Image (cartoon, rainbow, N blue to C red):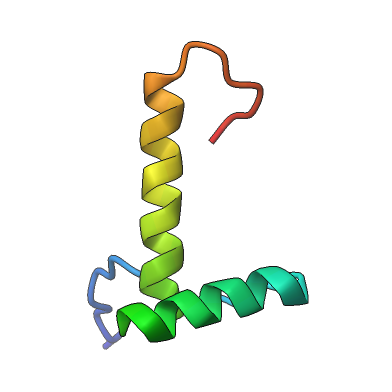
Length: 61
């Protein structure tokens, strides 16, 4: 019988970032005492919210 997988809300992945951006995110995550993944997810959610409020936006999300 095949194993039934749990439905997951997260996916583990590897992202390559420029060093300066990585350092900025790492520093902020340490100061706020949250993981980098939580910080990146929060930033992306804020970006998505700004996109929805904006009438002029050149990129798709």
